[in-house]
Length: 81
Image (tube, rainbow, N blue to C red):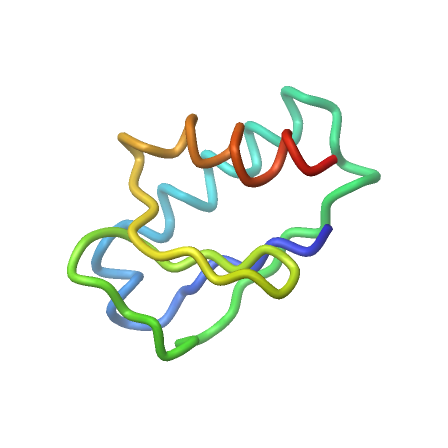
């Protein structure tokens, strides 16, 4: 699974550094280092007013925040591995 977190200017201002940190911690906590590749990317063209854009394989998700990260990770990462 390839997870790309947008680090473009809009997502950067909306907390992409926090989402990167949370994603790194979650991958480590669940021992997914061999199953997940984390990467940064620039604008996917799906900017949202709230949160960060995260692409998982071919699926683009918008509005990822520190508040909804846990449910996002469960639904979009853990459930698919």
